[in-house]
Image 1 (cartoon, one colour):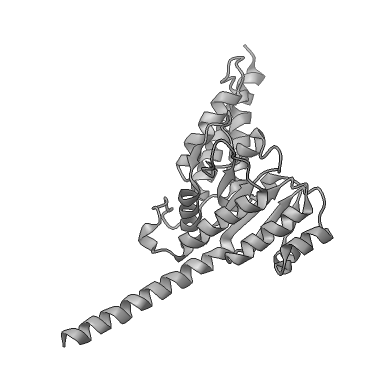
Image 2: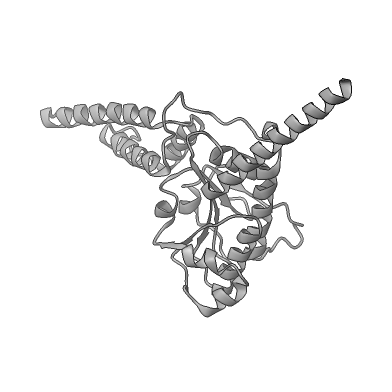
Length: 278
C-alpha cells in the first residue's frame, strides 16, 4: 500500500515537473536577444547559433554594420531560421519598446548607476518575467564589439549584467557572451519554479511596457522643466535617480496613466502661471 502511494507521488511529481518545464520553455518565445551596432556579420551568425542551441529564437539587431551578409549565414551553421526571422531596427528604444524587463550586458563599471547582476541572477529574473501570467517580454542586450553599450543605451536598461571573467583578461567575444547568457537562460527555464525570484505582479493589470515607461519619463522631464524644478542645475542626475525609483516600483499600465495625468495637470498649472506672469 505504501509502495503504491510512493509510486503515485512519484508520478504526480514527474507530471508537475514536466508541466513546469513545458510552461518555462514556452516562455522562451518571450526572451529576446538584442545586438546593438554589431560590426562583424560573422558575430551575428555565431550569436544566432548560440541562441538556437539553447532554444531561443527572438533576435533583434539594432543598426548592424552589415546585415544580411553571407558571413552571418556561414557562421550561423544551421541557425539560418533565427537569422531569417531577425528584425532590424534603428535604435535600442525601438528594439525593447514592448519589453517589461531590459538587461544590459556590460564589461566595465559605468557612470550610470544600475543594479549589477551576475548572469545566473539576470537569467532567473528574465525567465520569471517571461513566464509571468501577463506574458511579458524580457530582453538581454549586448553592445558593440569594441565599445559595448554607451551610457544613453544603458540608461534604457533596468539592470546591468556582468560576466565575472578573469580581470587580467576579461575580453570576451560577442558570440561567446551571448552563449553564456543563453545557457543561463536555458538553465533558468529548466529549473524548478521555486528557484526563480519573485517578481512584482500587478493586481490584474498589464505591466507597463518599455515604451509606456519611456513616454512617462519624457513627460516627467518636460514637467520638471516646466515647474523649474532644477533651478538652473543640470537635470541628468535627478532624472537618473527618479528613473531608478519608478523602475523599482514595477508600474503597471494603470499606474502610468495615473502618473501621466498628474503630470499633465502640473504642466497645465505651470502654463497658467506663466501666462499670468510675475
